[in-house]
Length: 470
Ligand SMILES: Cc1cc2nc3c(=O)[nH]c(=O)nc-3n(C[C@H](O)[C@H](O)[C@H](O)COP(=O)(O)OP(=O)(O)OC[C@H]3O[C@@H](n4cnc5c(N)ncnc54)[C@H](O)[C@@H]3O)c2cc1C
Image 1 (spheres, rainbow, N blue to C red):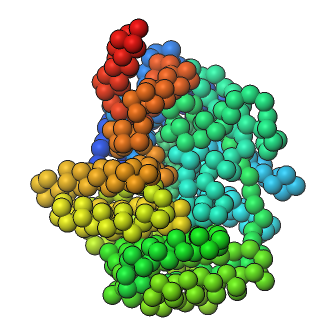
Image 2 (cartoon, rainbow, N blue to C red; image 1 turned 120 degrees about the vertical axis):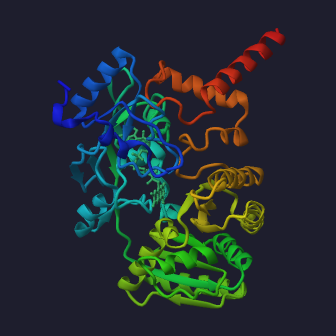
Image 3 (spheres, rainbow, N blue to C red; image 1 turned 120 degrees about the horizontal axis):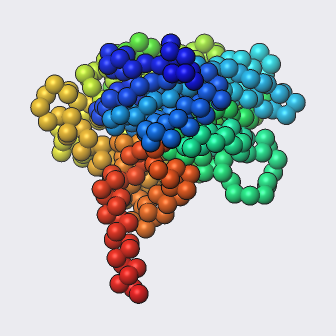
């Protein structure tokens, strides 16, 4: 407490309840305490103390993560970065901004929009999630199809290592700096290599114009094929999102309905942006490609207000599941775009087998699926079946050449599913890399990899095989 002040520490049981999990609510654990440092110096002091006392700890942003990354397994100290929420610098000449880790994603665009700039990575949780959390998860979003995910927009970071040492990594945009790409390694490392205390990001000039389209389909396969057609025609929309019938039912029953027909099987929400003069032809081309796939209707937003309403309807889609189901589990697999019809068919089979409805809302343009498994935790066995359905969806993604997470991370949720995409040797190599930065595994222990017993098993198997090979 001497480092951050008594009012910046929570340790009573009733105060810790709010920190039992993140947005993945199916697994919970109790933290030992939560501390709220005000700056890098305080973060480093707290980390040094915890390191010396051999107490495990976890960095936490807004807690919107969907794989349990910020969830304690039991007895960790949570280092909450929410009080470190300043926009430190905006440098329009060099198109960079410097933020503290607790700065909320959307606030960055809001802070520079009047000068014609924006920050591209736009997770649907951007009104709440922090840029520190985005770096840890390498967050994506609807507009990452054209502009890339968080790692493409991070230029530098200040990091407190698990022993309390403070380092700066990155190069503020200097091409090809010598040395290892530590920034690339840190981004997406799910809070297991260090605590990010300052971030330099790239900001972009807002496009001159944009147009938003909605395409309504009577057949989900035709909608999926239209997605591939658009990309293979060489059009690169800023965003290309899809929702299926169950998802449409949910968003139309929730807080931001926009009048989507309830008898269609799928819709595409497409945004094109760039120089005004080029937009009309892109809209025409996309409309024509959808027509060839027997679209029922294509319409273009009349104005920015209508486009914003369509986006609010889409971006609140996960939460909208609450309107049609008491509980839901969101999954996050990636597939090659061309396998979309096949994979959606297999997800329907999983839904039939497990007797659970599965809605799909996803970043179709980059093949990042989000099956939302609907269940009722009060009914015995439904939670377990939901978890099983989620794991089976990820297996399907891996089998068609995709992977088990596009943006939500592995956390505690997908530790075992790492085996769908990596061999034992590959997992062991990653654990060795983590151990270089986090040798005692005090920082965010138990995340990202198969459980400790199993990791030891993996290491042992490799050791035995090497010995057998002489
Ligand atoms: C409704 C909803 C929609 C979502 N949509 C998207 C989406 O479109 N795209 C997407 O990518 N994600 C999405 N997410 C998931 C989530 O918002 C992102 O993963 C986000 O990046 C998490 O940020 P956070 O501040 O909430 O981090 P937290 O949940 O607090 O933490 C996430 C992980 O980051 C680590 N961490 C946090 N801060 C730091 C730090 N400063 N230094 C080191 N490690 C740190 C934590 O230890 C944890 O492992 C969505 C979530 C919800 C609830």
